[in-house]
Length: 126
Image (cartoon, rainbow, N blue to C red):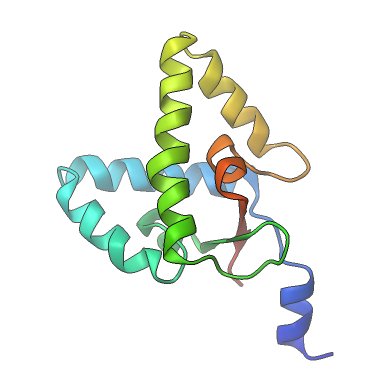
């Protein structure tokens, strides 16, 4: 088995601290660019299954079952359905939903609520 095959067979799940760093970078870029720059950059990064913050912190979104890079539809489901759902859940529950979503990142599968909605997880890019 080659090194590339070994990487595909057992992707290294992103550590919660690294995921948090990617999220913080994404939020910072979103604010600094007044959303426009982040959205444009995100469209290009979605083609390779990541957000701008994930690119900077060395992460990628993959299918939870196969470990393969996800397509644009799955990225859209994760970003446009899963994340707003988590934000709404947090707002309706006075923040409890946000804590729940964060807790999911430290679960064994390390899938946040938006990852569970899209059937994805985040892995480290070596």
